[in-house]
Length: 241
Image (cartoon, rainbow, N blue to C red):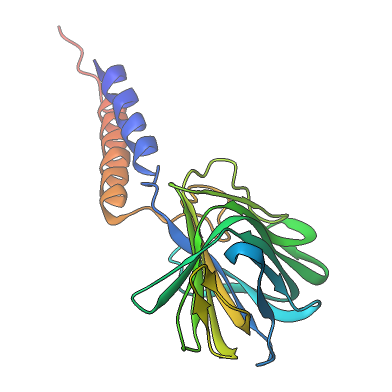
């Protein structure tokens, strides 16, 4: 019986440290200066092409498990390439659905972080998502998430193989000229992009995973039960006459 309780206590302690998977922001990027680094070019039939200004410098940041504080900042170059299908203008909002694209950040020099060395800070390949902006305005955005669309992350520093939920959010501001639109979608514009990335990282996050308060309570209870069983087993024996 004691063996059973001891095994059960150990199982409780182990299970307790397994965190609940929740999507959090693990990285961000921001431009080094205010120069334009994002271009949207309208094509035939309302289609469009997104390109980044070659060699645009950005600061790329890996965040802690709370998605709040930077744990590693590195100078990088930014590359954004995507295509869009014919869009729509409705209620003063121009929308261009993305068909496919890639967004990647390359360190200016090989760097070491999280026990790994490399230059591919993050590469995001995606299908779906939307570019949108208010007609006549100076801000726009690109958002995508898996599910329901498709987002894949690769990095020299973080393992995403166990993730199932991933998202991208890019904000484009200081747009010039102002966003225009016609019957088929958005017109040409350029601006300055920044953004963030999220995933349900249960392992491989920059600084590991911190158990939730309830998990800590279960873990303490489990270890306490283990200690009680050991003390009971090591107590003095009573020899009957």
